[in-house]
Image 1 (spheres, rainbow, N blue to C red):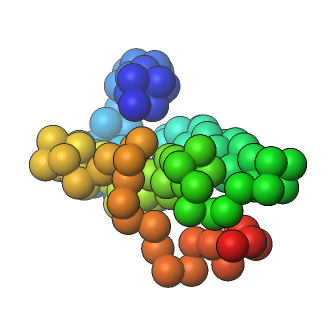
Image 2: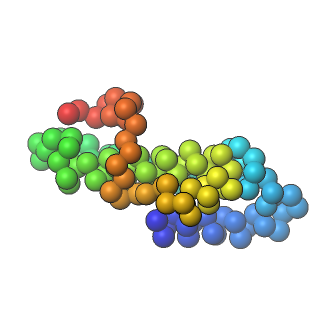
Image 3: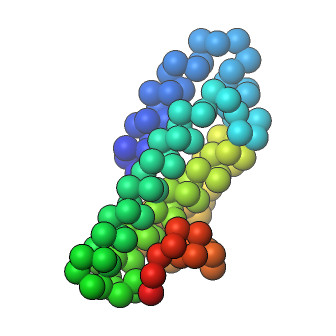
Length: 121
């Protein structure tokens, strides 16, 4: 989580001097100023999902094996953060402070998550 917040902080530092940009990232859905942040979260999710798939494939672990499922949950958490950030940073920060967004140990994995990424059982 610290890497996500560090990336966001660095991006916000470059956005704040631009007139109107701060309000844009806080309130606008899918702010163009946050495009690199959205891509970063996508890359993090993709990496975790790929690790889970590799662990399954090469070690023969089941999808619900602790070493595999933690990567899938972490990947789902990154996607959840991306969806929240795309609603505007007001929504993103509110979710973080209310503890709605949890990365490792995330128990929320959408029903279509495994089929969306072609993850075997």
